[in-house]
Image (tube, rainbow, N blue to C red; front, side, top):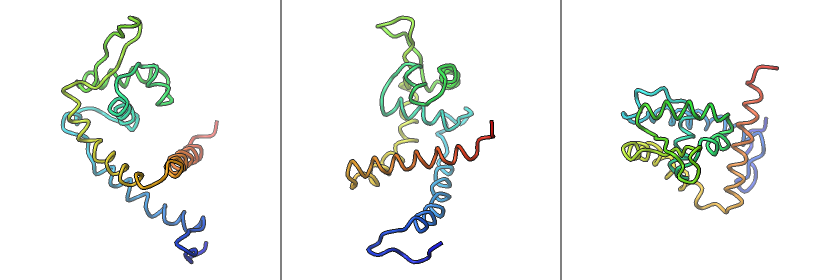
Length: 160
């Protein structure tokens, strides 16, 4: 591995890997030090719950099937997560006025301030970090993080 910085502030692959390996524990540590609000403390929340709540907060109410597609899980998995969050009074399911067979999931009015207070600072920090970038640069950042997640997921999955 090279230890020399590239010219003009550029990084070669090894330098970038080193920088990210040093940065990732700080990012993860910061996320872990951001506990859920007291209103959610009694719920056993996992990363998928956080993603579900993020979609509902930023994109508004949606159906279980829409959430399942976005979360890349089965609708039954989303239904279970929604049931957990419903028992905690954080989300609610209501009948879709356009199709009574479908249910619309949304954050409750009572749960909204806690969710906004919990997820809002991270959203603000991402806006600050991504704001100065071009649209293409932002897409590159997001796609790079997705590729990293896929690569680490594939390596940690049991062989089938």
